[in-house]
Amino acid sequence: MSESREELTSAVQAVSPEPSSSLNSDAAFRHDLAFPRLSGEMLQRLRSYGQEESVPKDTCLYTYGDRDTEMLVVLSGEIESRLLVKGGGFKVFRSLRAGEFSGELNLLNTQRSVAEARTKSTSRLLRISRKSLRLLMRAEGDIANIIVSACIWRRVSMIDDPSTGVVLRGCEGDPDLLSLRRFLVRNYYPHQVEELPANDEPGKGVAATKTPQVELLDGRVLVRPTLCDLADELGITELPEPHTIYDVAVVGAGPAGLAAAVYAASEGLSTIVIEGSAPGGQAGTSSKIENYLGFPTGVSGAQLASRGHLQALKFGVHFAISRDVVSAAQVDGLHQLILAGGLTVCARSIVIASGARYRRLNVKNHEDFENKGFYYAATAMESSLCRDREIIVVGGGNSAGQASVFLSGVAKHVHHIIRGASLESSMSQYLIARIESSPHITLYTETEIDELEGERALESVRWTNQKTGESVRRPISSVFVMIGAEPNSGWVYGAVKLDDKGFVLTGGQSGFEATSYATSVPGIYAVGDVRAESVKRVASAVGEGSVVISNIHRYLAQSRLDLPEQAKAN
Image 1 (cartoon, rainbow, N blue to C red):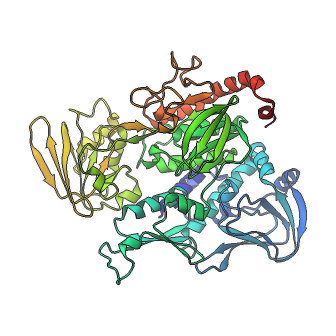
Image 2 (cartoon, one colour):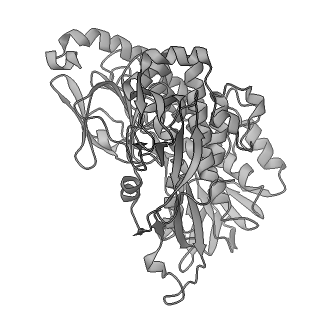
Image 3 (cartoon, one colour):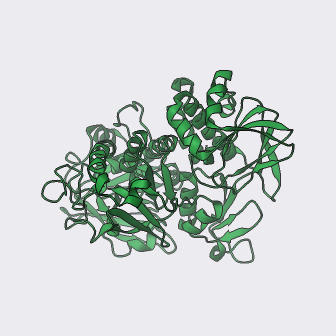
């Protein structure tokens, strides 16, 4: 099962009109949920949100690549939903009849459509605009859940279909291939992967200098595209609406940012989330979180992130994907964020939720092996690289513990290395117990990696006990590094007060108001891992993201009268 499919089928549990016990990450495709028929009473309620119109046969309603497609409900007649397949032709995905509606995942966001809709016969349609759809999703909870569930299951079906989606082609172990694949997975984009032998030579296939490639459905091939270029080409890129002043701009789509967005939008605030890559943040790379409330058997970070992302979409949160924030400033009482490429986002308040990233290992040549043996995530994608091999996990926190336990199920053996004398002060007890009881994990305390070797990729590692001086060298090609955090706060350097490590200072004497999340600048708040003295846990990040919205409500109420007339009108 693809990682994209697993995340989506897990996420659909939260919105499905069916009992959640009937759904799990291994669920077969649910045709009944993908193409539900709305009841007569539901159709009657929908009429107040749309305009009825008669459309002639063979009319293209929208096509592959269109943005902001409207929702079309069939009152009579028939619509064909069609998918673009390899070579540029179309095939019928589904015929929609009376009581059914058009659209899939892009109905909830501003990404380009991956399908086409065309009338098969003269049809009577109810056309619901994007603006009206947002009102509908807020006011009609039962219908909203049906729409979200259907959109997710339709994308699952597209991911399962080998005849559609782009082809990602590259050499085994290529870090650029892994990066592109991770990007497509985390954005739920239909794709297939063709791996070439690592020793592929010019004249005998595709040379390594010409990979990775992305073959598009129209036959064009992108050679070694950047993530930004790929996002733009596929229409994954989502940009802010011009001339809009948002109530809340959230920077970062990890657990803290997604929680802030969900609570803000559900309480009526116009909200945008700005994310450079894909929703999830650092937590999205966690293999399994077992102490998060409400998931007794655990949940992967990617699954939790996808649920939060789709929940935010349901409430009308606008996402700006694939553009990083470069700087922040105040202009005429409003906050202005400058995105890569010069785009501007204006908002009445800002939530800094840009999180943190794992520190790099202090070994002189570690940069030579970034994504060539050194990884900072332990998901199903990375685990496929170390099956039946010895591996190393470095770090004493919960993320490292989760990685060891998860990877011990696929690796030949896990060597878990920490600098401290024990795990007691930094890791949850349930993880410590599993590490100590596993015959497939060996814990090395007071130990550090001091030598890495390999030509094109990592081949061997030496580590040394700092107390005894004893060294061990093993033929290891995969090291998972999870050793503390560095804040993603460079974009606010000089705009708000930071501590000496770069974390955002909040509350106390540093905050503009006496709340835990207020920064030094009025209207700017910080939550989650980027905030100084925060607890680096997913649950606390979600809590901070939800609580900060009450502070923002109060701030907006106090400051609205002081805004320029133009800002009040938006």
